Every structure is written in structure tokens, then in C-alpha cells.
Image 1: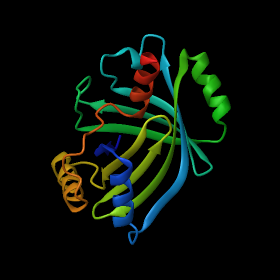
Image 2: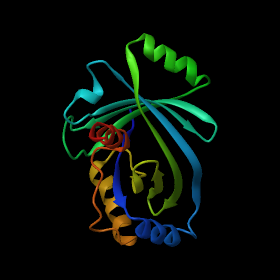
Image 3: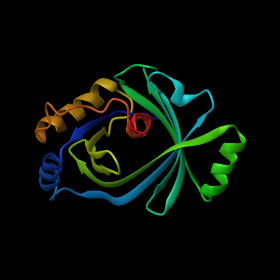
Image 4: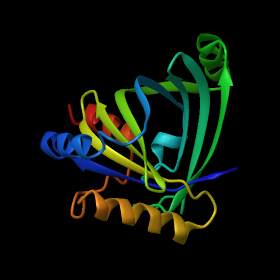
Length: 183
């Protein structure tokens, strides 16, 4: 499976708008609403102290996909990368039913608006996530060499003056689950 090397930063509305203005002349890859429904087996993914696997049905630009992600190192607070397996489906309702019959239950839905840009050797995504706020995700074009991929990300963090922003080490589904538990 291809590796995904990325960093997700927690942003304020002001930082989000500043970066949006900085990227205004950059080629835009996406401007879309994205909806991800996450599934977990009864004693599975979400019951780990630090979840390292996620299974979801994603809706992007009128297309639906099944996505499985496995983060490494497993169970670590800070991961280096994830392996991702993603494929198109034509019937997300039927796919969700299949997951349920296999013992997977829907646990959380991530509803976000994403603006994505190709910038330097990365994709920079500006996400507004319902019930969570603003995030900046930087994903390296490099898919094999972790050191080179991290260097691509570090160069963008410096170019966009994002040093010092806190990293989201857990991801949107985990943050939403934690928020529900706290309520």
C-alpha cells in the first residue's frame, strides 16, 4: 500500500485566513464538502488507547470511496506515516450495510469543507470541520522515503510561517469521539 506522509495542524480562524490569502495564487485542487462515516468492530479500532486503524466511507465531489488507514508506529501518540487503501464504490448505503453485517458499526461522521492546493512539493488542505474548527493539513508528494517526505512538509511549514502551531496527532474522528464522550 502507498504511504501517506502528512502533518495536521490546529489553526485559528486568523491563521486559516492568512494561509488562504498566501495560497490565493496557487493552483487549487479542490473546493468541496467532504463527508466521512467511520466504522469500527465491537472490540476494535476506537477501543485502542491510541487508535491506529480507521475504516470509512468517504464522499468527495460526488464520488464515494471505501478507505482503510493504518498508522505507524501502531499505538504511538505521534505517527510517521500511514498506509492507505482506497477504492471507489457506487453504492455507499449498500457498503454500509455490508460493513454492519460483518460486525462493523458506524461510530462517527466527520463533516468538513476542504480547500486544497498544490504548493511546493505538497498538497496543502485547509479544512473547516463541523464541531471542531480550523485545520491545515500538509501532505507530502513523496510516498516512499519518510525522511524526504518530512523534509517536504517542513519546507512548507517554514514557507507558510506555521512553526509553533499545535499538531493534531489523533485525527478528526478521534477528536469528535472524545468531544462526544466529554459532553
